[in-house]
Image (cartoon, rainbow, N blue to C red):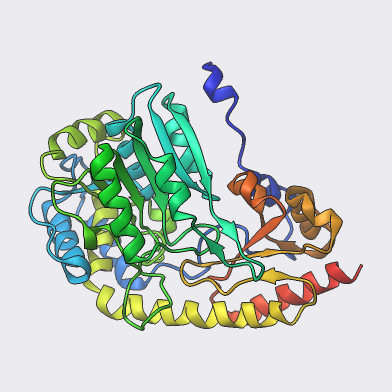
Length: 387
């Protein structure tokens, strides 16, 4: 086995979840998914596809009709990306790995904005790249902020890829359009690629009906930019494993080869479900976002009433990122998260899962079908803090 693989840390989120296996009394908010079932029209479209016998390979890049629908969907948010720029993938995380395989050789430098979902920095490391972490910093209120000058200084002509996830998992931090403009202009000068994980762009709590700023809004079709998306979050399709990429012009043939060598193609019936999700997006996504806004506000207002917590209301995503600075045992977030599970029946993700920058913090996924579950969870956390 390669030494790089043996040195990869296991998932600390899974480690906490394993501590609660077999217990139906645990309120679980550790994973990044809603507890709402995928909408019926999406499930029905997949079932009908299977009933028609659509159990064979599709084009490496995805069904033509799905790619056309993704182009139309992208155009509705950011302007028409044009032909020959969209590739369908078997999950968003696969899309991220394919982007790394497309761009990164062993020894290349990749700059990653952290704290972040651990899969992102792990993927270039698996390929033998050197990963440089540039950390966001929390202000006294718990709002995470980017030191743009520090990030710019870290991106040099030797930097092959800038990898950035915004809205961010776990903190909810989001790049402004002005910051994106500065970054893309700098990366043009250094020749650096940007891989933008924008899977949470629709889970944005700014103006109603809007989405988070995207690098697509400040780029040209020929920029060194790869934007990664997923059906998981905005369409309640985590278990379906369906994603897509928006690539620069001229890169689809290379991506088709990589998809062939990784998964060949996404299953047709899953793609049919994705097509149905896109057809219903204009109605379903705003409803979901408003529900999540209510969940966010319910949770954050309840947590704000607990003494000593450090927490800012996140502007995007589906997570509250909180700290208990006055409780010494909370400094070890993994141990503290395990104790919350075993002693209080509350399942949160340890901040250490997102890198050393997140140590001492906890991530709470507020994508709950019933906001009352969030309040029950706050009661259990309150009980843990009183001991």
